[in-house]
Image 1 (cartoon, one colour):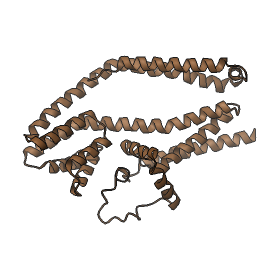
Image 2 (image 1 turned 180 degrees about the vertical axis):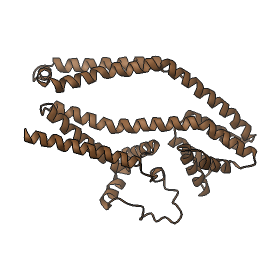
Image 3 (image 1 turned 180 degrees about the horizontal axis):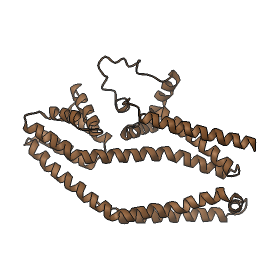
Image 4 (image 1 turned 120 degrees about the vertical axis):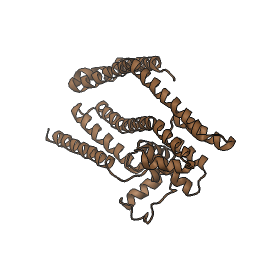
Length: 319
């Protein structure tokens, strides 16, 4: 009993340290977008070696991990979410979360393999879910700022600014995240990167349909000519209308979306609760030679997934 209590306390402390590390990292003023998405830029007078606050081992592991295809995807995902993690640090967080939650779930669930497995799965899902939620949040903020950004560019072009000067004004006048992204675009062009390539890099970092629409218009105007200010003014109006219509659709379909999430999660949470609350009763379903439990679990998961997909398809209205 003393050993079990010791492991539970240790797991809780590790989990608290994990959360504290995430909070401190997310509040850090250190901007790693430039580091993750290409090293075109270095601040004036900055020594790259002086900026390295991590150990040699961490840097060595990070370089090896980033070279893999999976590491590159994680690097881009972290940058899109604007999280102050390197790839190796993110994997360390995942490993720690899996370890802590698997130990905690294992000892609370009677030290069974299934309990350890439940904790490990939850620990692996939580960091990825958090990164995805931050990506969606940042993309939504960017899309909401895009009409104001286009209007600022239009005013600058009408005042005699070049396209690059108008983008530089955007990077100085508007708040994050749109100012951070256009600051990078301007810095890339100042270092000799063509405008088309710099805008394509922006679109890879921010996969927004409205941004794609604006970049396409700018590229066409640069090739065939025309009044860019008038073109962007029309695009700004179109994007504002799209955002308004999307908002109305989201309000009308919010009940269906929330119902799909709740109805899908309730059976899962209830099953996990019963497993830990009455482990002996639930364990009878998974005894050796008894395939009933696995059959019920598999059928339930398939039905839950199909129901969720159908309900989300009903609520998915393209604009």
